[in-house]
Amino acid sequence: GRYEDAQQMLAKARKVCERRLGKDDVATLSSTSLLASVFRDRGLWKEAEKLFVQVMETRKAKLGADHPDMLNMNNL
Image (tube, rainbow, N blue to C red; front, side, top):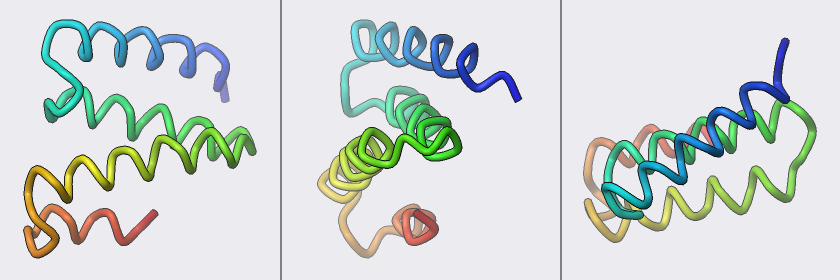
């Protein structure tokens, strides 16, 4: 795949989302999660883990641990 291109585009999208919508917005969290997936697929484990944990903690704080959307986080 074209992981480097995807990484660059997702990093840019994440910055735009953070700047315009805030760090806790669903679009920002989604782009962050996708970027973490690219890091994981490229074998960049520490970078991926950092972002996955950030997304998980933000969603948990925002939605609560028992929210149905938190079930998706178990796939990480």
